Length: 398
Length: 147
Image 1 (cartoon, rainbow over the protein chains, first blue to last red):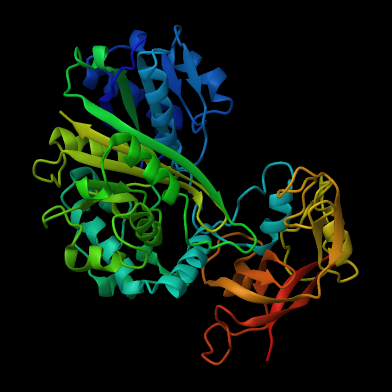
Image 2: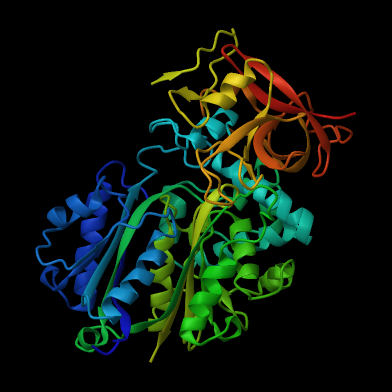
């Protein structure tokens, strides 16, 4: 069977960031799936490939087909790599759909981190709740919070590559510049009571915000929200009959990384996932109009931009300075929905990268880049200071 | 499944749990204030954290060695906000990866340091020496900056 092209044909982002306990992760997943199917003009019956990382219920490969009511699945994939799970799942769906193993794939995400008062960033709980294992036994006793993990990565990064706190702050400023144009993000900022309200912020405000774990300030860190969404992918034959214009998956790459004795922590797995995705798509970073890059913390964006090849190591400052990555300045635009820093972060943000990249290529973003033709979604799951996964997806339109 | 008993009077700290076959010899040695790591019998590669196989070759025969307890700060951060009940009382505390001279990288605390004192010597590249933190049944290998 000849290889088929594969497209994103349906998307939905769950609008509320604070459900006050009125919705579960499963509700958010099923609601989003239904809306994304309507977006595409498809029904539950059309889905024959399901991707789920277990955010709604354990053993998702067993439980989610039943919960959704899917009776004709040919592919079930439960890849779980934290926030980059969805980029990995797109890479797998690209293979499954292009080779004829299935025709329509559903990816969903739901989480209620805000309503459940989950201390994602500063709770220091990693593997403590599961059975003991060598990692938990060597690490849990030190109380390294998630913020302190990325802070240690940032400290080493700044030491080796000359990156400054001012440059990192620019990434948060750009995210807020985009968030204030996104009604859902503005509502989130109000509902969650975020600092400085639904207004632009400055470098100085980032740098003068509370130090959480040196050198990362409060405004270097993503917010904690509820939320979720869904993405529907389809073969070209199905996509041509959908209500939406297809957004083609041109390439995808996946890689994992972990701290290794004696190794350079600052060179991330994006140096492998990026070239794999760009190579498959036959494009280079210079061709990209919109970069949706996982922004758990400002340093995660800076390291990814450099390791993906948008600039050389240590030169990301020149990209971000003076609004260089704003949607309304020439060249590359970054995180045009407001990102995890200023729109939503329920814990695993990777699906929103795919959703906003798709909006940009449909011309539907609230910070629309004129004539955007190529976009990437780059997810980072886990923590760059310990063990993590990097997934890169290149998207394009006709 | 039980935590190692913490017989000190200080607020409860998270401690390693046993049985856990890979790390139990490491923690057992801390009772004698020995910092242990593994070396592969076949290729002499260093393995850390403790495991039951060599990550450099296909050997599954490893031997324990004792480190001299000297190393260098690879990176660090000052935790100023922690909501974990076991660490609330410790802030601000300094978490770090230390490159121990025998060739392994260890998550630890830099102890007995004022992170806000410019003259503390707390910086990447600083030389450090193991400083055992008594937690009752086990001792935690913290590190102190060499002066």
